[in-house]
Length: 147
Image (tube, rainbow, N blue to C red; front, side, top):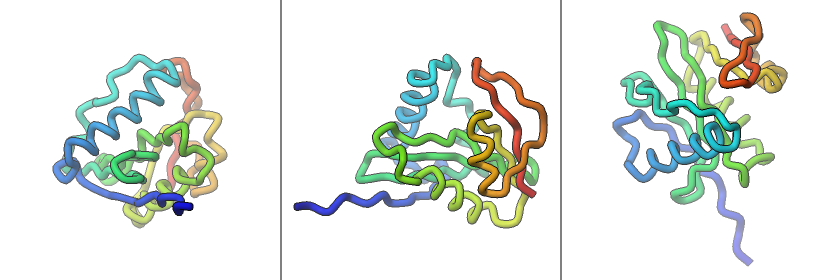
């Protein structure tokens, strides 16, 4: 009987990502956002490489199981691309990533654009809706902020 491998938290700037990890991150984001959620859009939007961007993920070996990024936008930290691999869902990885991202952000204001059905989920972390619901790629979203 082998112990279940544990998920290891990793944090890196773009320049510190190795190519295999970057590939795994982009693959996971495409699998979920483009294929599963059927949103045809350019996921590598140029913001991953910005010097202020931080990438946070949980991995088992080389497999990226959950991921998010924090963008630095003029004194406001923007959490985005929150994603969990289908086989890793229900293990609390996304919540642990949100908590870790808030620790990284510290006391600076944070914003995110949540899929509308997840607004109550993000409210548990202190986020409040900050504007009207809107459609993005056919999916209802709400802007949220945490001061």
